[in-house]
Image (cartoon, rainbow, N blue to C red):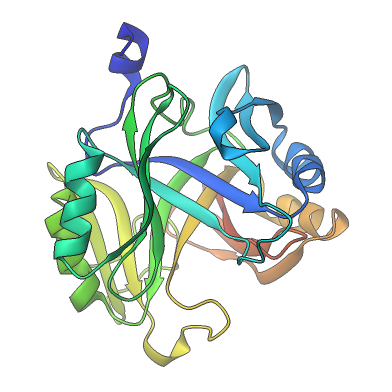
Length: 267
């Protein structure tokens, strides 16, 4: 591992990368390039057509193209950092999760697993080598928060605590939603710092999506970004509304991948 990767790698259990698998890579590149200002460079060869998205020359996310014979749901996947992906895979299995892909090497960039928690939400686990993950959190177009939307928090809260060492705390949403303590919400913490969250929505969980991790991307203006999503062929699922740290919108890209846009500075 290089000194640069050692310096930028995230603590184990921290979301470190967001990756999207699509049917038409060129279309996705154009959409996110216009929306977030991303530029692209080729990614690890073992994954087929795959690009790393860059802002100011620094990696922020990845987009890959599914093989033509695969008809899987198009969705953003949140990856969590680990120092030992093989041990993490065993922990996933022992806690009722399922390992779908890996552990496998990613062309010298690192080693990964793609798995699901006991209620079926897909996530990735990343052991960094040549690439530590997102290098530029915070500005417009970068992933800044990860939130699991699921039926309830009790079962999966224990799963993430065991696999990643998270300490789960009931309370308000620190980033995305419009706050309050009248719903089923866990903030996942490492050494007292919030790193992700679990939102239990009960029967309100969409049947066509099931439990899923939601990636929140920072934007300078949530209203303008939502309008741009429409112009670029995406859909606004929930129009911009007030959150604890600024306005938030939920949208999909042209292939239906769900993401949230969060305006980091309240007006």
